[in-house]
Image (spheres, rainbow, N blue to C red):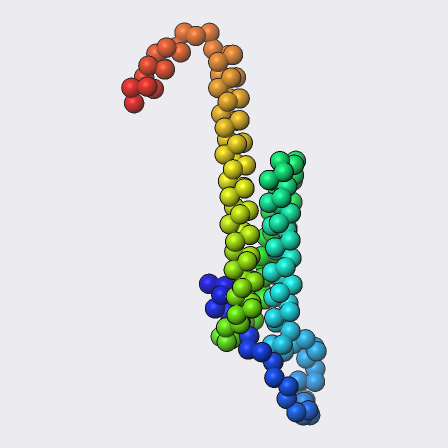
Length: 150
């Protein structure tokens, strides 16, 4: 979806007097400012994703909520930038940047999945240990036998 949006390269045009309503627009209101804004948004999101992926890979203690909030904000900025590019001619350089972002997001997703699986395994082990420590063993065999039959 992200690859179809891009802007044609800017060609210099002869100087013209601006219409009266255009004079009140901010200097970056044209489409020429969309690509740099989009590139900054992509770069910001890539940096956040790279930081989180590296921290997960290195098994560092991280605040996942903080990373989630930062990624959500960067994604919002990226979405806003992409809206300004609808209907534009595809830009191969921008498509390559989006492809790079996509691969970084896939690596991040893989690391998050591993992290969540490890958390799930640890929590299962802890809950089993708590259950066994609180049990007097009365129903353990019956439950185990019934569970193994299903």
